[in-house]
Amino acid sequence: MNGYDHLRVGIYGGTFAPIHNGHIAAARAFMEQMKLDYMFIIPTGIPPHKQIDRSDDPLFRLRMCELAFEGIDGVVISDCEIKRGGRSYTYDTLKEFSRPDTRLFFMCGTDMVLSFDRWYKFEEIFKLCYPVYVRRESDPIMTQRIVAKITEYYEKYGVMFRRIITEPIELSSTQIRTRVAEGKSISGLVPPKVEKFIYDNGLYVPEGK
Image (cartoon, rainbow, N blue to C red):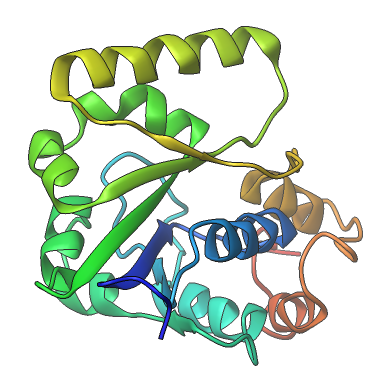
């Protein structure tokens, strides 16, 4: 038992193309600070807000997530968005995980916080979960923008975004893909098993190389 009346469940979605050590550090902090019983890692099928490579294979991204979180208690890798097909909307995923005995915590990155009020059915999302966010950078100007936006959400919708406190890891999946394409090492940027999977399957290497 967790000492609470409800099961505390975290939802952490993303493209994860590929998943890297920044994602994993954020996930661990999310689980610890929100005192989650379970955390679902959910690779996106077709992201509504991002352009991904035409050669992208969602099942490869799913497998890399499984390798990255292998053996970590309480973490479940879900293929629900990939199986659902079509564009992956957060509202649909939260509805799927919503239960009377469960409190859902949904983790966002900085860019997601700033654009949340442009999401599909965002007001309904606010009713389904407790939104939390994690910083991926330490830019003081960005801090001002985030504080202003969070204040706006509270004043307009009565919703408070909670912050996950962790040292920002300024690393992106785009950087990982670029390094692989350029023949540079990604050792220490992704888990060793993920690194091996990327090289074994020839991911992110331009055609003809």
